[in-house]
Amino acid sequence: MGGIYSGDFVTVAQLPPTSFVSPTPMTVAALLATYPAGAAYLGKYARVTDLYGSADEVMRCSSNGSTYYWRPQRSDYAVDMNSTGGAVSLVPLVTAPQIFLTANTLTNMTITPSAVNAYPGQQFTVTMTGVIGALLGVSLQGLIGSSVPLLTGATKVLTYTAAGWRPE
Image 1 (cartoon, rainbow, N blue to C red):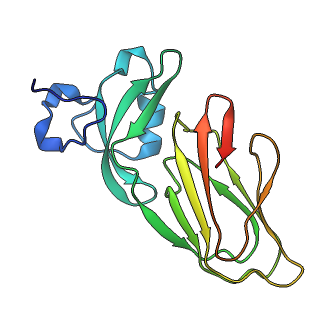
Image 2: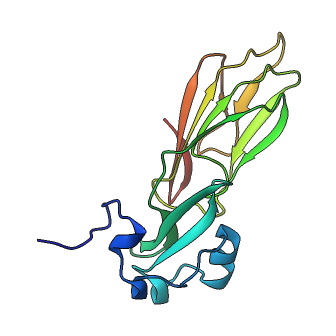
Image 3: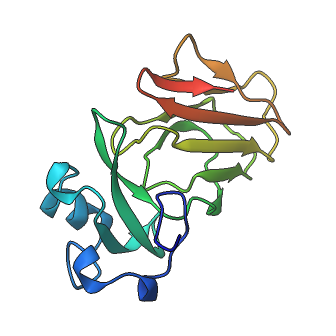
């Protein structure tokens, strides 16, 4: 059979140089600005130096038939977030896909996933490990349907579809 399929994880050494849009690694912002996802780059790879803020990783230009997008070959990256309240935006390819809210909340908090850079199947898993203060709340906004509360010790998975972000 041999060959590389879209679901396979690959290493840079396995790919011929012509498979890449650029011979040198770049930031995610540079990739998106210089090589916007489209038919010309379908199936091509790019090496980025700051996926989720700091990961050196390979991305692939993919399509679902009508929409083109850059998709990371790795989505198992997690961070601890120390936000104590206010507004938090989850930006695909910039924010890690797995987030642990570790700080105790001092003010109400709203968490909103962005459609910028999102691709079908993109997920954010948000876990509240800190303590939510009395009379305070943490809610997930910008979802299909309505906002969803996040309680202490709870985990919510958000999945991006063509219609927008859906809570599971």
